[in-house]
Image (cartoon, rainbow, N blue to C red; front, side, top):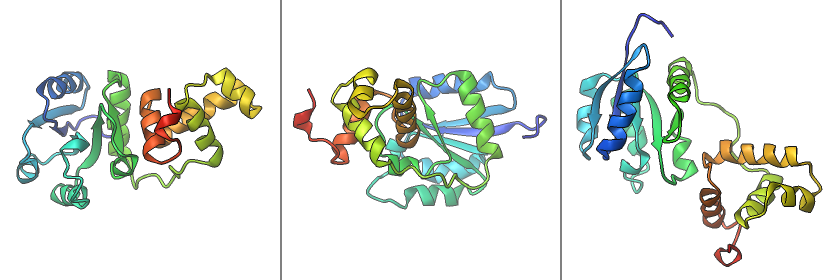
Length: 197
């Protein structure tokens, strides 16, 4: 990334408090500026006029019935890298369409790294986001409320291995919380809702 250029960011987020908070964080990052915040549903018609280098968009504003809306957005701003702004559950299949995910809990430093990686990124990673059978077993145990220690004992693993599996679950699903992983397990028919206390 060239340090002399200032990269333009457009934020598409309906909630002002979240959009303004993200803007304040980005304003302190050298080389980046928020050129616009679009809070209404007419972002598609307006976004190209800002000539963004990066678009940070809340995926929930997309019409999920029209799966091509992400492709349409990418076609409107082909020069821009697309990042998802996430603070609630979003289908991991939708998140795969973005080059990065900015989580509401990310620090300024982490956001800085992600923005720079977006600009340096070529093609999206070909790394699999498919869960292994062992990861599915660990996910089910987490959803049932088991601790790392009890999971390790149940599957005859070290606690460090269980922690590694949990990190892989977070990386592959984009979900950090136990409740979010539980919802993911239920939605993907890995566990029955009756099995969750």
